[in-house]
Length: 286
Image (cartoon, helix red, strand yellow):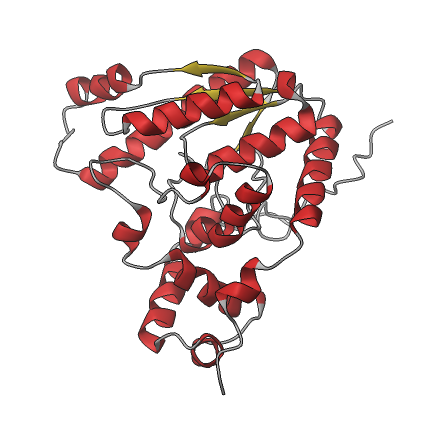
């Protein structure tokens, strides 16, 4: 049987509907909590650019603030792309050099080691999160995250870094779909098809670090998560090697802790995160 879960089928969705759905959701949610808008980090990549464009469509240019926070590992072209996008969208933006903040960590923490590439990269993501929330607090706004479904499912984000946000507008779209949505929204190819990378260290690219192409990751995740196939069934449906399917699934399982609130040991009758969920439409207040 030929593969029936393919990248072409995955990306050929109704992007007019996707755009309307996300815009309506953003307007409704931000209005319901009384926020004045959203702050978003701009990297010059496709995820942050698509998120910013959707926020502007939903909230207007005065309801969005973009923060560009380069470090020494950030390529100049990424900063240029982010600035040009912010100008094209007409939003208020600021470029904040986070080198001095990062350097303060290495000069004040006795245990700090420059050789710890991943740990130090996570510091950068958490510095950026802190700055985003500072601006959000100042302006009575929320922080809009830029993570997509592919990154969320395989855990390719920093816990309490780029994962520390209030809302994820593109969190139910796979990377391949986000790229198509970017083209639908009129983003240039230089952004829509730019290789994804958090730029947390020199030469880092997402696909290089993962050892997998997003096209492969996306169809495998779609089979495993959306279609609820087991790894063997997913292999047959996608035509991908079973070793690849199992590699992706192991990442999903191993990173579940990143997608959950901190776990609490049960003591009382109702435990947060286990069997207590605050009703959305009822507070009991008069």
